[in-house]
Length: 149
Image (cartoon, rainbow, N blue to C red; front, top):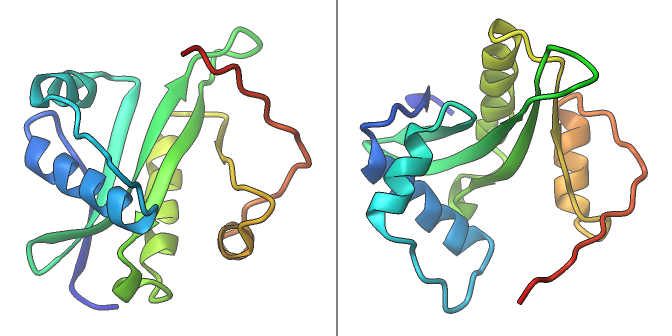
């Protein structure tokens, strides 16, 4: 798709971060979602171990991803974990998600990261197919959670 800008947000672009969270809310069908306070989101955006890439079309955030840097003790090179990635439904299957993956991979190569990784649910065939199509190598793992409240 033409005229799509992919960019990494800087700490002074809180409004676009909030727009992206609204994209996640829509695409992930998050019922009763309560947006965190702006000062909290601002502090997150200012961290050096958290970053956000957005896709912009006609001045509107239509997709993006969030990622965390995980510093290792096995290597001095960090790992980067893509926490969320979504594109508004009407813009899906037009190469935007692939462009986001390419952008984060280029960025992480420059920061000399060892690897970028992302999780997808086994039942989410669309996500599994998408990540395979972007060169992702699947690993069979079981994810455990410990709810704390």
